[in-house]
Image 1 (cartoon, helix red, strand yellow):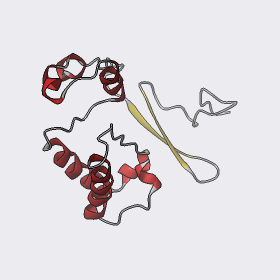
Image 2 (cartoon, rainbow, N blue to C red):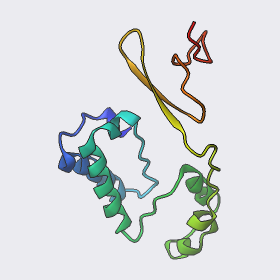
Image 3 (tube, one colour):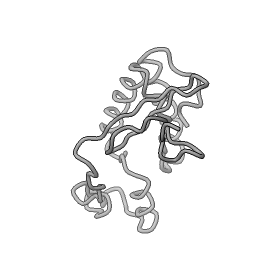
Length: 142
C-alpha cells in the first residue's frame, strides 16, 4: 500500500517514492508490481501529479506493461514471452470487458458524521438524507 508510507511533501517526493520502489522491484525479480492506493492519497494535488509523471515514465519502458489484476491472472494461466505480448489477446485494450455505464450522471454525496468524520458515496439516485449505515441501510432521516 503506497499510502502506508509517510506522505510525500511535494510532487518530486511523490514521484521518487513510486520510482524508487518500482526500480527496487524491477531490477530484481520483475514479478508483477502492484500499485495500491487509498482514496486519501489522491486528495493531495502533488501526489496525483507525481503519480502521473511516474505512469508516463513507466509507459516509456518497453518491457513494462500496465495491466489489471485480471490481466495478470490471464498471463499466469498462459505465460507469454516479451516479444509475444503485443499479440496477447487478454492484454488487447480494444477487447477489455469494461463495465457498462449504469447511469448517465452520478451524484457525489458528502456527509459529516456526528463524530465529525466525512464520508462520501456515489449514487445514480438522489443522495439519501443520512449516510447509509448499520441499522439505517437506506440512509433515511430517522
